[in-house]
Length: 62
Image (cartoon, rainbow, N blue to C red; front, side):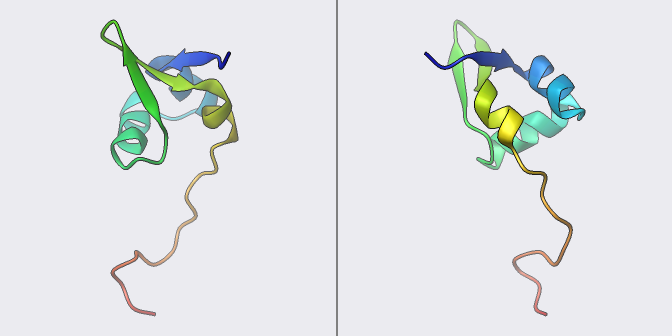
């Protein structure tokens, strides 16, 4: 069984804000499930998540 973490725990693991975790969920970069009103993330995904590298946005031309 997969182990889950809360948004706060995920933010602490990644050393980012809770808002950043929510933004990643909204952009579908991290999967989340809601159980009894609590948003939970897969620990393995949070730990293995690669930060986005800075660069041109997808709508910008080189």
